[in-house]
Length: 276
Length: 294
Image 1: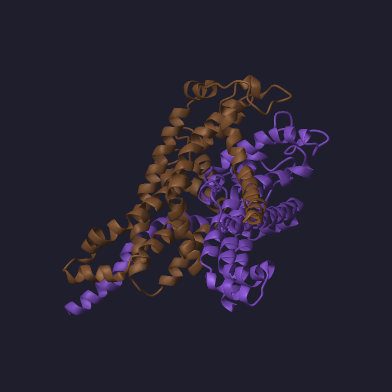
Image 2 (image 1 turned 90 degrees about the vertical axis):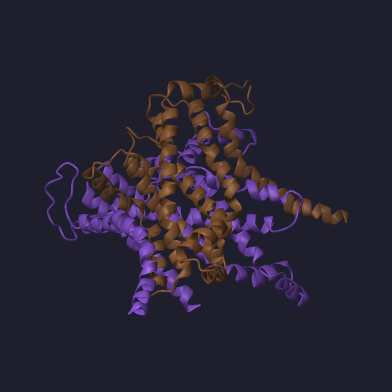
């Protein structure tokens, strides 16, 4: 038994530990740096271990910058994108999973093809379009943009969750006299709720993390956290402590949501990938 | 009559359900994409927005004659092959390791995805901070361990900037491969491994003849998705180097972006964007043709 234990330690656990160090170190370094005084961060030669810990960076971030406002903007945009994205993707996914119609396969591919267009291809005309509509620098512009670019994957995930629900349930509901809409509302929707939550989380994280749309289609009156963080750099001298505090605060909700939804997201993703 | 109406209704239902999604994607994706093609055939400048003469393929000819285009294409190639290749190899190694059983496997699986959840902007900032010449932790560690003889300005010199940005994107992207390939591994039947072991296959032979064929579908799909994503992405580079120093990290999408926005030349930028789309389309078509052939 002993040699096997050693083999497992050296051959599996040690390499996994090394990969985890690589995966977690930048994150830990960011969080750690955010709690160190600015003077300590910029004193050369730098020390690896903190000499003292402080909340000064976080307090400065909330008190001296517009960060609270940026957090609110991000929250409004991401929530709006989730609602719009679910309203668009759920019916579409239902159509793909419950109906067999001409052009179904072509349409599914077409939705995925949207992901292929480089953002640079779309951002220029979108900028012009939003300016013409007077929507530049508004919540609507970002919500519409984020809901659209997450739509292909949202539909893909939603379809794979709906397909996991047996059609026999629809049929049973129909025999009991339920209309299609009733069957959807009373039978399918409750069963697909975890999937719906997972898709919602995917859209939320994507919108929360997005940068280019948020920069180009807004940025003045509506400024999300990613744009705000990047703009801290432009303002005279880089304050790393402040930046790392901002990074920590922004990364937290996305990380927690991702950990919560991880299993379902990967399941939905690879369910399609394996079949694909 | 009623039966026919019911049939029409049935046929129309899926389209009615798809209509909102189709409408939104038409307005926000298809029409802008067509507009980009239109702009690429005209001289459209930020500074003279109302004069838009038709110039046929002049923007494309100009792009192909520009050495900066070819340089950014080469940079894109290194960026895509380097980033996707390393993400894949590290992701595959991680998946194979996490597929074995050990006590804290669940924790390791959960934690390894953390880089994937972070915004590119934050990843860019953190790596810029860690790679900093004076204050970066990587230089300090490198010096202490004796791996470096002097501090290196990773992002400020052309020779190392691209490698440094690739390091950051590998960190961001390898968990994607790890989780998708791990799911693929778990779908391979244990019987196959037993049969191979009975036939006297060693570890490498089992990997070569059972694992790889079993994973082929997942590998192909995940490589395609990731290649498209990495080829299009520019936020990480934009945050870390802005394409510099000089044009050392200027990939094709970034070149298109900077031509349009900093240069104010919408027509030229659009032509570059269209070229990028066509190149990616080539990759996708090759993939589809090949996967159909198999």
